Image 1: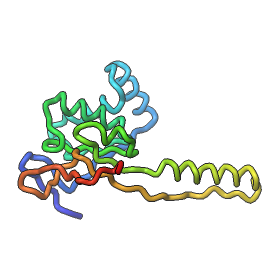
Image 2: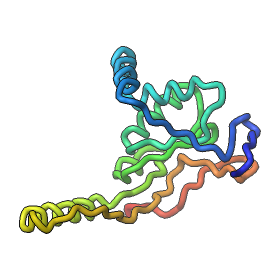
Image 3: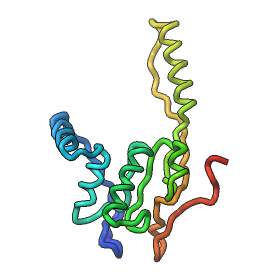
Image 4: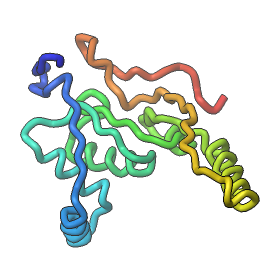
Length: 166
């Protein structure tokens, strides 16, 4: 196990934070979200930003949630990526049109649909022999401008000059 270290912004390094909630906790969270008038991701981001030690990076479940989280971070007066990094998931075109461009994990939606369709057809044509399978498809990172280089003296974006849409 690696040692925990504080950086010059008093944030922990070498630490991953994630959480799961029970159905009861999720129901309570939904109530808080409804009362707040915010989206779930915006509510959770705001709660994270209220903690005494800020996260280094927030990884969102999709690029649209990342956009909402970025708004909450910027409204608090924090800078992306200098104060906090954000990462999305999907690789939708919008993630590359906003500024700063979102660093995102691109999934191959077309291939996912193709594999799912092939499995459905096999399940229909051979219902007795069909065995569901777990398929893992590769993705790729689209470097954007929302992740800081924490190894540098003055953290800067790890943005690539290569545009993913070219």
